[in-house]
Image (cartoon, rainbow, N blue to C red; front, side):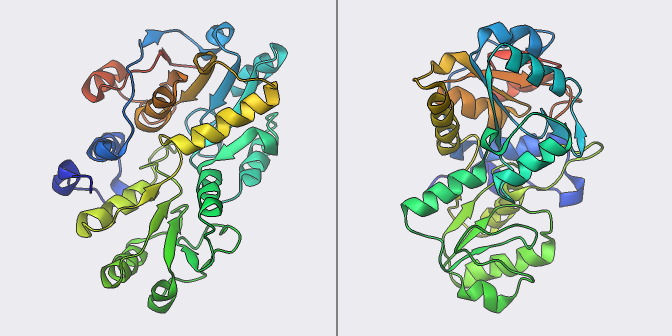
Length: 316
């Protein structure tokens, strides 16, 4: 069992009080569960657009790179158009797991972005691949009421003691409808009978225009502080399976193996996008003006965490 001393001593804020600083502190407390990786050079450029000659393919994060809340990030349309003109393949790799990837694709298309269903991979896809490998799903429960459960997995219209008790395992795919009362029922059910828990979204938070949301990693960290026996299985960035799915799809589309160093993982989070990309062997680009670090001294945070991207750009 991995020792999480920092998590045990960390005071977590209420979900509506999450800030970038408290999110960074929680990511650091969960650091023993995250992969090890080399350090990038943290070179600087004005825009991602200026770096396109460095890459044969781009893997873009969703929140913080393509959009913040329901607003697209300035420059995303131009970036996608220029990547297409240069025949640079683009995939979106998002930790948003509440709904099938085609739902995210429809969202992007609603913003007139040239991203099809085949261009979007989510941490949900990695979780489903795991369930298929273990021939699981039947008897499992998707926790949040505002998610689309995977095939064969039980959904729930209202969380209850009996529904929780009947599940042989749980998948936390999203948390937009999750609340403290749900959390208490969930924790008590695990206290009564510990069962496997899969985390389909390892984000602590997602950036909104004026605030930060509480994502599944925040809620599961609350449970882990109270239940030392709980050892969730994580899917999505920074963990490797999501990157394997994205890399294999890019290679299949290219019809040949691609050099990982010529693929850019572009994101706004050091602990998910950048750390995961570095660990998988990709080139990493940290976008700083719109997501988690938008109001921070980024170089200071990089020094404090020891997670350095290959490139740092304020804008797309």
